Length: 173
Image 1 (cartoon, helix red, strand yellow):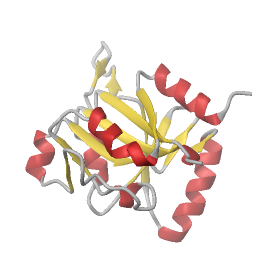
Image 2 (image 1 turned 90 degrees about the vertical axis):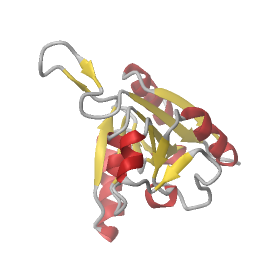
Image 3 (image 1 turned 90 degrees about the horizontal axis):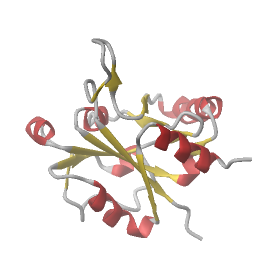
């Protein structure tokens, strides 16, 4: 049986999403390598993880102004969950408008802990119900680069990022 991570990576690759992995200790370097400047982001402890790392040592403007967001090429956020069979990312919405950082740019870099990959949508919804019951949180589910065929030919990036790069933070022993 295929692992949930392998299923997730396969679904991402089928969508044209770039996938890389790193350890938590190397995360800042992996993020720096994945972004195209100018880059904006939200504090990662608000959207993923436990606050043990930050974007301070990266070329990313955290909590950007509207002008910085307009000029940005890359947006960096955490992802709450990954959905294995669809290659979808669950992105928590924050008071700092993290959804704008993930949707208003040409390239979205999402950081996801390996342990937060769920095998399928049923498992992801059950996990979200458990997490959001306590916090009244909300999230969006994003699957691959933005694409539309509303006007005929397929156009990428019409309503969101043209490119998505997922960095999976591997569990360390």
